[in-house]
Length: 186
Figure 1 (spheres, rainbow, N blue to C red):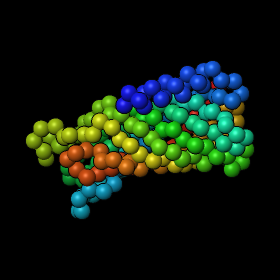
Figure 2: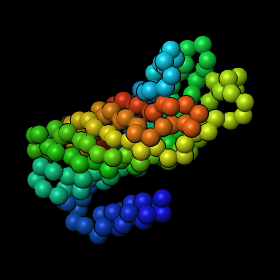
Figure 3: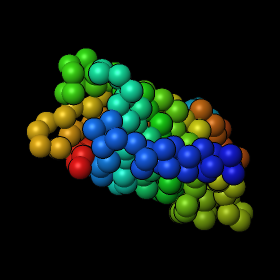
Figure 4: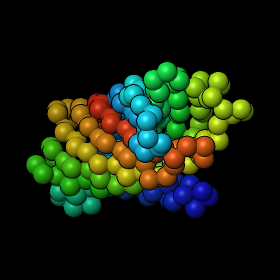
């Protein structure tokens, strides 16, 4: 984890020393529709609505290719019919490669996402499990989606993120999140 933090600090230090036309900063936020994938048969997981908000930097490497690291607060989880709500909050750090299909307008985004657990609230486990659930403190995922620069720094995004690591040691489930939102580049 120390290496990841150092790598993120190195990227942001390099960004601040870069030319302003090559690097643009921004803020973004939107709605999450999250669920769990996997797990035992017969459990009916329902989508849970949450949100995401944070900051990003777009580093232009080529005319139609950029790297976009982000730092987001994201609320996720799922609802289990007849059992209750599973809620988690993460600080997520996606590092996305952006390929522009239409120069500086429409992009395809893909890359890894590193998420660090901030809080978990599993009302469902209060009656189903003795003690607190053993939620994983780190979630590794792959993200992919589309971005559209609208006008004047305003942009829209849609992204799907699928967890590659289990969300809990007590259940074999992984996070799955669909995000839509707006951003603003300075």
